[in-house]
Image (cartoon, rainbow, N blue to C red):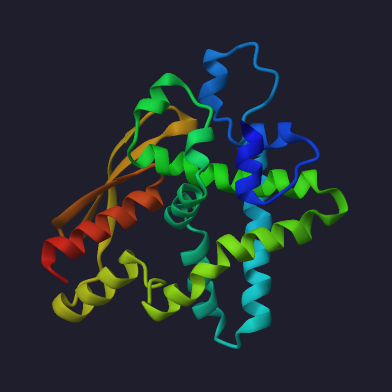
Length: 229
């Protein structure tokens, strides 16, 4: 079955267990004590670094724009929302190994799992391909991630919701938005946050996410919608 995923990735794995580990969420191990592989968090850690380097190298070699602008482009390419979308396009979701509880959650938590799995897959490719690891990862990332860059630049998708809301709030109300954590729940490895965005003491909107940053972005998106900005 995983061979089908490898075909979709267009990577011939020497050790298919690395790919299996890449799609294994830690919750799966809780229900399958005899599972012989580790979960994917270490591969995710490695893949995140490889992904960022490949994208940074590409931007450096192909654009002469200011550093700040290229930083925004890179962030738009490698953020969780984009990686989850790419993961979905490849078809990673049907291969995810997770607990029954995680399998029922089709919302933001699933997007988080898909994004992490994508980074873990990059890490698995890097390790599996030995001395060619970086080159194979580069080819994979250029085809699946960097290909999104022209659309991001054309539609100015690199302006994230927080930046947009701050610009609008300062221009229209003369106030810089602030964010406060309203609620925090869940274990350390799977926390959920609810954050409010405020103009002075007025709460404009709430947002939720699996990190404070994600919850802040969600709150900013909801605030833009609420105010019609």
